[in-house]
Length: 280
Length: 288
Image 1: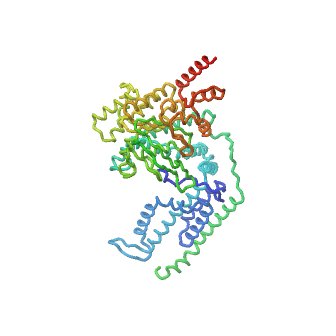
Image 2: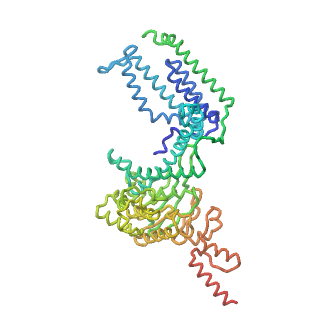
Image 3: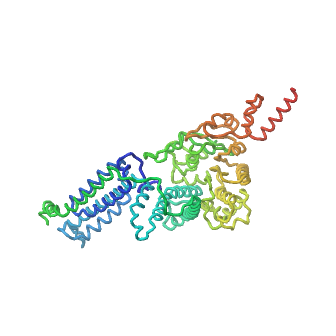
């Protein structure tokens, strides 16, 4: 059951994306997400989709894996689509149900929003599929280093994230073990009403909580035994270096950002009149 | 008729992903009522997966598990019934304790079976006595017990369901010698008092030699041997190739044999070894 959580799981493969500097990958992903929302018109959004698609293919992760990440957010997409379609009232009316009028503008906004959400999810899973959690936090720590100037303890923050990420699989495994053990004693978590299901969680949550505290204190002891004392003067085992492809992709991303802002600006008028010239 | 039987069991983790692992590979064996079976195999040999297949926590990709002649997956809705008949004690079972008192925790299984309050109370007392848990501990919080007591309380939680087959995954792991002894005696007592079959996983060959009527050897998810302890431990080379060991007594006998003494085969307990050495000395004395 818990094995179905694919979002945020590393998928081992040998690809250009896997080998990229994790800092660059984070910037690219943030860039893609920004692009999704900067693109206001169909052609620019298509361009973003195309770009995302190319990058996804570069990861050599099966497309099936990306589609899988979309499954849990289908309800989110449906709800936002309905709300958008109902509340946006620009453009011409298409049809009317009771007192609600659905307009072309509403439908367009709904479609745009759905595409944006899909792209957002896929580009963030591209990051997590191709980057190990440790690389990820390492890169975040370095990208956040400038925040030291506002007295933010970037290292501790990154360490907490690393530990949290590191323990997600452990906790999932532990949960499964405890669940199996309680199921072996006849615990029934899968049927019954809401209240009885909540009550059925107690035999799982209490042992899990206790073992988490035990693990935390053991880990703290083990870290202290190895003289861990925070970020000052710590050196790194793995140094990150920007290589050709890292720089090339960063430049490409910057160019795309510019192109989409420009196309928003100049193409919108042309395209709208081409597509909806009659109705607008 | 065997009480528990597995036919051509197969189980694969993460099928269709890069993490795919064939954990149990075509395993077939059966256990008679009242029998104690030791399961040995090094880490990753599929022991834990096999145990979970036997009480229906995992569903085999193919193959069947029958309890008392009935296929447990014939109707998936009734699978819980078989979990009460095949009691499974996980490794480090003390980490599953959760209730306010030891008594309530032991009662969790029987309660899930839908027994009457009276019957539950009796079973809790019987189980506590069987695992040698003194009555004054019952109203305490399970988290105030010592390590060994916690382990026994957790095992009592499964025994209280009075399963026809009791499966234990490394029940003595991480215990001191005395705690180990108590658990082993408890396994024997449950087997003798209730006539239930017991399967237990162990890395300790002495434990297996002392308790098991038959031994199942696993490696890489496959069944290597399933026979009586004397026959299994006679194959010391096979066992050593699987990074397993033979009991000390068997090792002594093998050493003696290499030195040219005419010792009997199939000795795996210290008592039998002592008798054999005494016999040799006597005969040797007579010959000299």
